[in-house]
Image 1 (tube, rainbow, N blue to C red):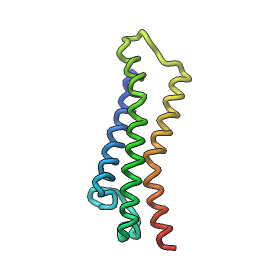
Image 2 (image 1 turned 90 degrees about the vertical axis):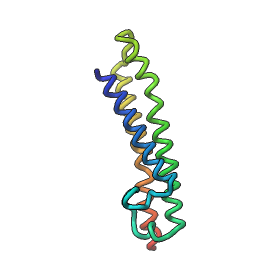
Image 3 (image 1 turned 60 degrees about the vertical axis):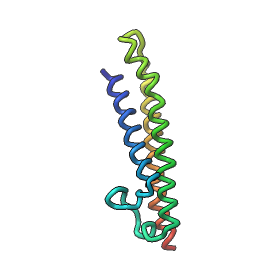
Length: 121
């Protein structure tokens, strides 16, 4: 049961990352209705808007690719019907890997906040 939960978490993380990347590729990361909260300086400057959209598209695509990678080994454990298992250290590795994926996905949003701060200087 725990393996199905881990599989679902990585799958959900991948889908959410792909949806966030889609918003960046469409150029809507700075739109309040479709995108995310960004500083006013970024919304008003076309160059910063383009940079913000590029950051979201690139980093969220990377997070999606990273989150889909563990689906293969976890899926093989699930499909083995109890013939395979993951050790405790393997589960710790999956947890740390998930933390890395979340950090990669969150990076563009923190960077966009700093873009707004640097534009005002």
